[in-house]
Length: 470
Image (cartoon, rainbow, N blue to C red; front, side, top):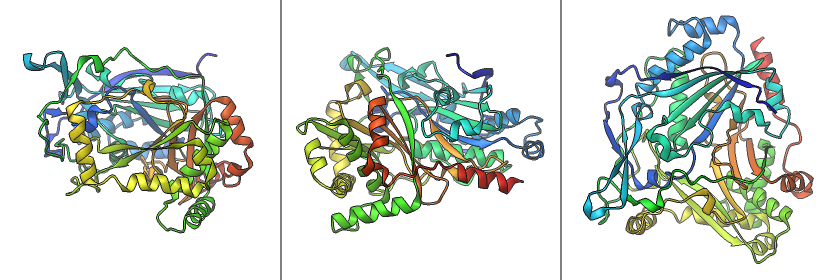
């Protein structure tokens, strides 16, 4: 079926060039091991859904940019925001090594203000209700994002950041595709929030990004530029996932609290967090629904933000990647034999062991033989967490009201991709999970899983938002 989304215009948006906004201005940024680790996956995609602003609201927000339309206002405010985030306007460059390291390639960021991509699109006949009413994520959402399927290494010719503003019948979706070799989720939402601040009329953002990309570990094999064997970098080798479905499950604040309390009670501890309890409940439920041989292994990977775990911590506003993927691997029989609190505690223990010294050891070994993983190399029954309920996406007001929903794109789609975002109700969570149709159906019918999942969608919150605008 033909897409309902039409691209009306595409342009390049550059920084206005007011360099005084970023005292850490760098023309060349060398990639760290954190960045290089992400080179062979696709751009990650996140966006927020807003109710359509009224004429008066458009007029009010446009005063700060002297524009007459919402699209022009967002384009101009984006340009002003990029003054603070010049790496987004650059390009990835590849450099062949000298003779002593022949057959290897090093990558760096050239902050040359080539610009980011800006699309204006219209979703014909698509309403906010179409996106929100069904827990199944409609395929049209995938068309709200640019650069789908583009690999991070392709930023030699593609922009590091691409934005698409899609007009619905009664709403606006502002979606972005960002290169994961340049930024992680924390840095991405730092940018998104800053754009919202500029759009609202602020002249200066609340948190200036720290642009210097110095790796915190001093290692024998570390140099200013890391070179990777060419056979490990293949931009044309792309992962094609099987046919999958995405569904968003809503965990209310009450049910999140119940899961956390139950998990901690089962294990006689207070260490298990709300997120760990929800993830363990989901992990165990999906494995139960798959009816696997109990000798098979399953892995749950949680990306740990290292900013405050290092000694000393990274500077406030550190802009880049500072995450490490920490996997917990166990036999499916072990997972199902114990209560879900046991699974939550295994995730908790994995995360707790990743301190400064362990990370230093990991990257010392990595430097001896740099690994650049691919999605296609992952084993079966692998679950990968994206996002976090700590990203307070519902505060990102562009000047006409707060967002009403978060949605991810098709980037890095795999059987077991899990995207977590906060719900509209404080303390609640929205968990988007990508699985086969058979597993999704089994999960929907699973009584144990459904005990803590809300059947009603968060449309109630949308109705409250609409009433508050009247």
